[in-house]
Length: 333
Image (cartoon, rainbow, N blue to C red; front, side, top):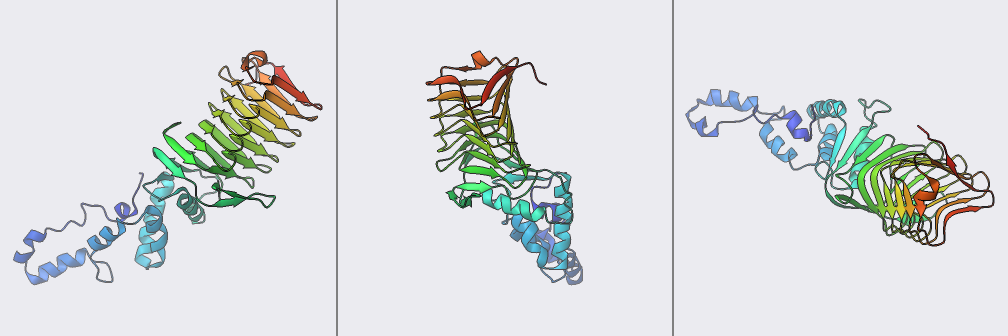
């Protein structure tokens, strides 16, 4: 059972309904007994608690009331039990912003009912969501409107490209795993999506990175990217940037076009696999596919054909520098 409102889980509507029009004809003793049925242990009618609770978000309901009394802790436990049967948070119904969602996820994953490895799904409704705040990168630079995913195994699901739009950036780091689906990400301050550090994993499905100041998506320092059906275009640097030894990216049926620099840029030992008939890199201002320095490899797997999928780029469709390699490969499952 999915419970979207804490007060609904605690106080089913039909259970505590009072027939106020009949109260005047009821004997005082009977009336007192009836009222007692709907009172808390401190004498406050449950329907008043229920009304007050209805003005709170799920986070406020499940988190804030736990310390009020033993009764409320039990009520919160009921909510938590139902939540973990289908761990889904809806935005904006259950939280007021992406930042509040992150706080809520951090809290939930510290509770007794959490089982390590459980994926919490954040469902974003149609509309525009603004990222507020900043993130400091590993080199000490503070980046505005960037939101770091604070815990492991989060899944962000929008209503489709162009339907759910995020103004700002998502960062996945510190070996965490996160997935994003059905979103359009626009960042006027940096990369649209950024995965950083060893063991970090980012999964993208039907995600668009557009109009970003930096790259549409950037993966570095040992992180892993797996993207399917994604589009990266009209960004200030590359559509896709992959940097560092042990850093890998797999792009299946993805497009990268009309970016200011390269469509797909691999640097310093990174490995990129391109596959799927729908993969296309075209009309970028500089190179289509670029591989810099020895050990860096871009593999193009059949049925994706290298000489067809990278085309119309302003400088060169394929660029190899100082030992970097761009090559056609056999099919890969």
